Image (tube, rainbow, N blue to C red):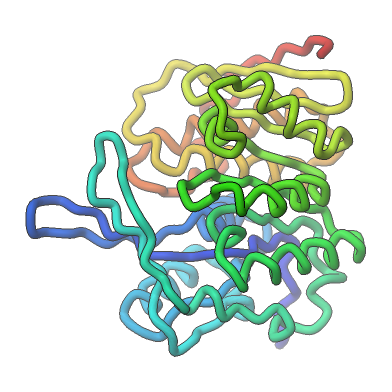
Length: 310
């Protein structure tokens, strides 16, 4: 029996975090911003897939197994006989890292090899992370996003700033922002993307790229705001016992997409509350572990969204 095609797809990178735990010791963790968002939405119960390419070695095996465990549609996960993409996290406080992935498997992703008819079946497609800063993959993904939008899919975009996104990324930022129905950005993203200390000016520049897009603007413990048209809603996370903030941003993005995809009749204030609750729930457990609906609903009632005019 042929499985139905997923309603949500995240297209981009999956990688392995190599985390230094001592002078001569390392720990590996499966990860990648795009892949994490796919897991978040799948955990919430929406049929989901990660569209990307991974290696055929032990690192790729770990990502494949974790994708299966997460319930992702593996018809969209490609295996390539190239090297793995690694994020070398050599310091934790504050995090310092670099990427190893010259001609790695992720760069060989082929959208033409995805299941037939998927563009007509999918409702939301998410793009984010370093996949959009690594050629030739970046150009393929921008082209794919344009094709999907033309086919009627909703596009979400989270730049998820990293140091490799320098001036060369500016054109991609503009293209993806213009294509997106939803943009998720953090305060730290803005400073890096626009190479400025003026967050207000940077945010204005981002909104000018697509005034019609809804923008989820997250600020860590200070909460988040949702901008749509000339209105804005604000919400703060509840007071919780934070175990780990890793993956909170991806959980917020995934929570927002899930809410928009499954309950489009909700008001923007409710979508924001759900996104903030998802981010908060992700902080209740160690590591980038997607929160389930029960965990999100456990904090949702503690969050109030207030609206005001921009």
